[in-house]
View 1 (tube, rainbow, N blue to C red):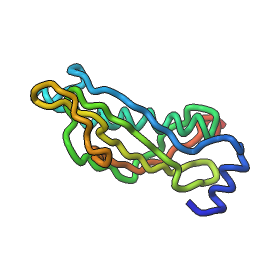
View 2: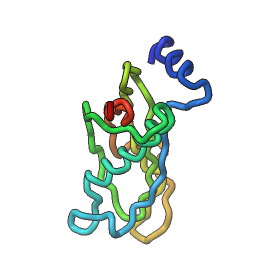
View 3: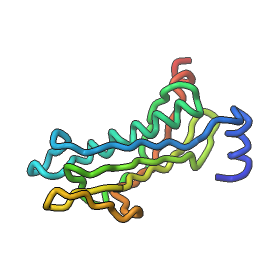
Length: 139
């Protein structure tokens, strides 16, 4: 993000963060494939929640996802995984924001059912999306 884009964000509201974060636990009901792996739709749902938090912070409303530039699913998600989805604004448009999203695995379960603190850099999925203000679309 350039300095002018950061300044634009700050001028809209000096105490508003353009970042978002959500933590979730994957349970047995989240699994689809062979009863042991969560679907890509679960990842997209987590990304949507992060986008909503960012939209609430920068627009003051839930906003809407206008589209995804890219999505990458990098490793399987299993029951017992604790995930953290984070997002940040990377570009400020007149009525939109481009966001970069990353999903990390923070805790996983061993086959014996013991907690394993995952490598904090384990990236499960990434995406780039464009969000727009719901108020601006209603006009």
